[in-house]
Image (cartoon, rainbow, N blue to C red):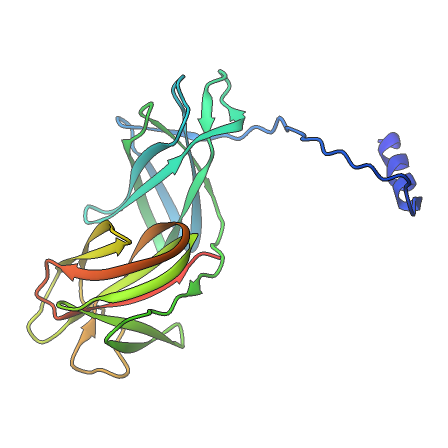
Length: 275
């Protein structure tokens, strides 16, 4: 302790050093972290008192031949109908292993936005190289997302959310909405089905995102919103909101959105990227 204080005092007194020949070293710490094991036979249940955000850190144990990228998936569910598929691609960490020396991947994370009240979530293992996914939970709020304007669309729908005006782009069943955004990044797409006088109860649709020829499909179930209305359209009523995520590679991406599998005339879409 005395040596450390002396070193700090000396550094505070030094004004210049000559000659300056810097040399960089890498310090690997021995910090340990506790993770929970998620296996196919044992889902993990998490009960949270909201409103809050939970950040879920994930890693996987890697086989002996761990070169290259590895894909793993898990399911986040709140009740029997509300399920979200979480998919990550990762590779081996150069500074991390478990207590037995087994190679561990770099961490990947996602957020759970918990509304007001006590909510219970179930995390289920879907696929991983060694049938084990490591999980760690933290109370962390996501950074603000950046709004991305659409490059091609038919019309704009305006709604009041959290006391501010939010713009959605209307995607009609026979048309498309185009977004251009630079990667690498993650694009969040918030979708609301538009109810008219012919639609009642729970509905479903499929949102299709074509990113330069690579197609992603997102099946979504929804119900009519009890609170939200459009300020500039009284002929349609939005559904509750559902968000899906696209991982974008490096470079300018042109993403074409279409919908299928619904009798609704249109869907409202909003686009944001992570900071």
